[in-house]
Image (cartoon, rainbow, N blue to C red; front, side):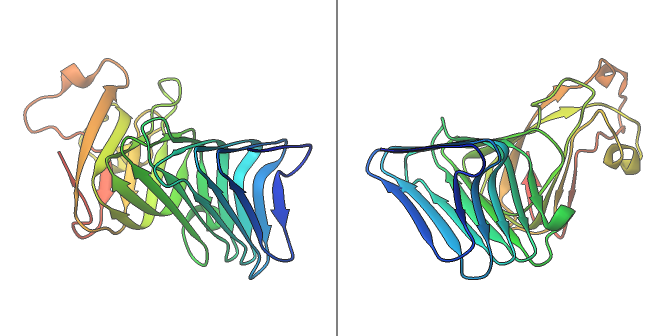
Length: 238
C-alpha cells in the first residue's frame, strides 16, 4: 500500500515522470492538489491493484503547461474528492469502473471550453460523477456510468458541457424545473440543470430527473421542458 499525506501537493512533478503503483491501494490526501503535473513531457501515472483514493482541498488532479496525469483503476475502485483542472495544454484522464467509484467535484478545461488541453473521464458499471458546480469536460466515455448533477440544495442548478465527445450509454441525474417554453430561460437558469453535448457517437442516454420546485404540474399539452442542447445527433435521451 502507498499512503501519501501532504501539507501542499500529494504527488507533484515539474521535471520528469512519476509512477505511483501499489499492489493493493493508493491513498493520497493533500491540502492543495492531490496530483499536479506541470510542463511538457512531465507525467504522473497512478495505478493500484485494489483501489485509488485521492482527497484534496483544492484539486484532485491539476495538469498545466503540457503536463499529463493518468489515474488507471482497471476493474477496481477509484474514489476522488476535489476538483479536476487542465489548462494551457495539460492533459488528464481517469477511470471510474465500479459502482462504488466516483469523482465528487467540478471539472474545468481551459477555463470553460476545451481549446488546447484535454480532460477524459471514463465511467463504467455504475461509476459516477457527483457534480458540485458548473463544469466542462473534453470527453466522457460511458459504459453504464452516471453523471449526477443533483449534489446541491434545490435552487442551485449546475451546467455541464461535454466539449468534444460523449461515447457510450449512461445516465444523467438532474434537477429540473418548468420555466416556460423558451430554451434560453433554461440555459440561463439558476434553478434547473442543463447539459451541452457538442459531439459523440449518438448512443442512447437515460434521463432521471428530480423536480426542482412544485411547478411541473402546471405544464400543459405542448409545453416543453428543456434540459440539453445536443449537436448533430451526438446523443439521444430516453
